[in-house]
Length: 78
Ligand SMILES: [Zn+2]
Image 1: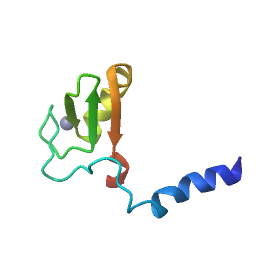
Image 2: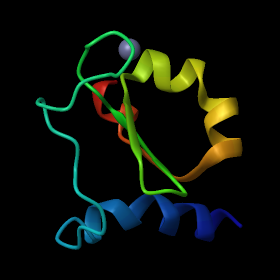
Image 3: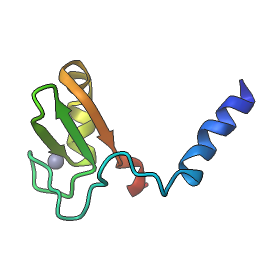
C-alpha cells in the first residue's frame, strides 16, 4: 500500500506533459463570486460551471451528485 501511495504522488510530476483536460487560467472566473476559478464542473449535458476554491468546496457534495466530471485545481493555491 505504501508503495502505491508513493507512485500516486509521483504521477503528476512525470505526466505534466500529458494534458488530458484544459488547465484553468486566470481568465476563468467563479460563477458565484467572480474570483479566479480553480474548479471546473462538467455536467452530463456538456454544460460547464466554474467555481473558485471556496465555492467549489461549498458545493462539492451537491456537485459530485450531478457532475459528469470535476476538474479541481484548488490545491495549486496552497
Ligand atoms: Zn466563488
